[in-house]
Image 1 (tube, chains in turn green, cyan):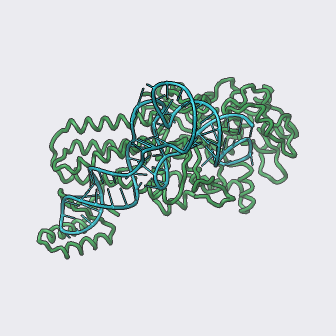
Image 2 (cartoon, chains in turn red, blue; image 1 turned 120 degrees about the vertical axis):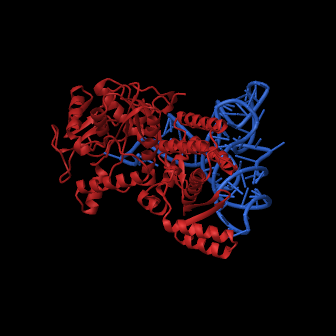
Image 3 (tube, chains in turn cyan, yellow; image 1 turned 60 degrees about the horizontal axis):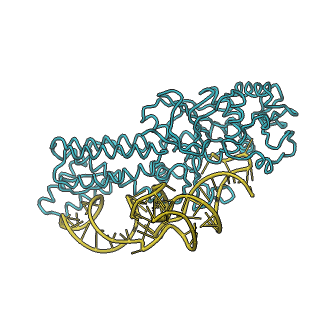
Length: 465
RNA sequence: GGCGGCAUAGCCAAGUGGUAAGGCAGGGGUCUGCAAAACCCCUAUGCCCCGGUUCAAAUCCGGUGCCGCCUCCA
């Protein structure tokens, strides 16, 4: 089966066909760096990283670009409040973004452009739009003239008249039409600013992405992604700018992730219910947070609270325990040779996982497939005899699944410390002599060191708790 | 008002025309010196409610409720 993905532009699931056969050009709108990222910012980072990984799994060479908005009103305000330099503040939070997302298993993009190092391209872009009469200057500001772009509204599915009735012209703006939006904003007194043909100022929000996409990926890209709230106006405006300039479709597939809610309420500063990633991963394994995000389909709303996260932790633990038990069994049991039945069964699960993922990156169903496999696999582990080939194929399968989902299910195989090894042997001797009190003392001793023992028919296995 | 989404067990969540996946939590059992892990069984005569279409609806249509966007919020 081919990959099907829901395209906001057509409001349908479509078969994915890239521009070039084995190559995918993908752009994901990144954060405005004026604060630590919260769980809601983490969702697009995680789900589109998963999309990238799956495309690679399917054999595509993915070119992945994600920006940082490092100049805008919110950053300027945050810098003023903190008494900090705008550049320093942005730099600080970009570093934090990398730390937090790396913990969540998000791989670095091939390019992470910033507004501040795309300024020339942005200015050129605006000049070209003015030249083509899609934009006009007014009092040092430059606006995009939406009336000049007949397709305006096509991405968000909004009727232009409806939009216009809700739009407003702020005091101090000199737009010809309420729907027009700023490409360049003249600086107020002491604000940070750049030279331009129109005024000393800074770019509007939307133009950066258009300029970056063009600079790094070209006129038309395969996938453009971001949070669902960006559909309008941000992405609509990007489409208008880019397509007005090039006359070509900006992106063939538009992907938008759903919101995360906290206890069924929107996360907002006024409610004070922000959940910051850096605080969250102090209390929980970051892997759990990623697994939690992937347990829902990326377009669906996702509710968050501690209880739900713990539920996800238990589920992930079930998978990890299974893997550890497979590893133990592989070490302890003799090879019985091939097992056609089991190898075939695994092929079926492998295929099912792919079918799940082909269906609009349905990680919720893919994870269900994994759970069902774990159940069957556990039955296999209960059998008196197992085959090394099957056990190794199981580990291989979870290595693949873990790579696609960005969750490492397979722990590094650690060598037993000599000390632990000795103690386990001593306990074994004690048990064989029915000295259970002594055996329990040894187990308690190991428990204190974080080593959990489990006695099975194939010997004692252990894990770090 | 316009656009879009969602309503399924105690909780989370699949399923989008053919008779309710999976996970968490809970109960019972098996295994074990004890434990842990695991396995087996049980937990929605019903998918917000009411109409309609159909041989057949959780799935389609109408209605209702909630939420998001239409404000430089992922």
